[in-house]
Image (cartoon, rainbow, N blue to C red):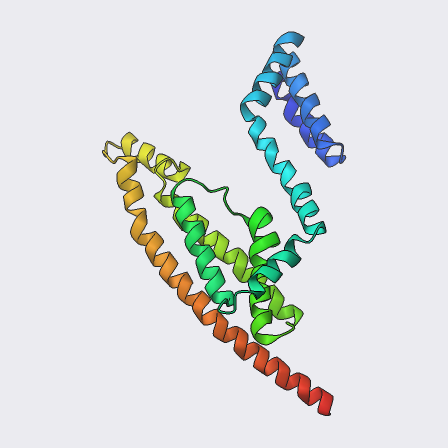
Length: 233
């Protein structure tokens, strides 16, 4: 039972709010020593695990990179760009992004999008800019609705698009489950059955986005009317 001491160290370390990286490292060393591993074997295990999973640390770079881009006007430039497209509306822009997101996810390119690296710095500001082009300055409540719709569009495109990719984890999980129960079902067949669902998801959410333009117009009409009444009053 001594190798389980690492779990106790993690619980105590997190409860006392120590540095998580230090806590996990100490827990790993303690577990290795309790399991009769030499110091050399523990270091080799740490090095092997880091080498195999080093790509996971790349997400840490997302926040500072996006922050640096925003500091130098990424959001402002995206709004200026969309303002030059007179036919652009919030709904049309998000429908286009939904199509791109779902198509690329179906090819396994799930990283070509996301809330942190795409929605916040580009998609949401462009959607807000398109609404401002049509209706002028937007109230904060409406801006939040547009941001929420932008994030939802990314979620829908990714969720239903990746189900078509044959190497997606859920596809492989279902393939393994069927195989264990004696049912022959190839991953390609499972992925193919995801296509009708993805098409329906695109049509349904695309319709919601198309109607969203009308909701924005109605919201701004009511907002301007109430503002005018307050000024007149």
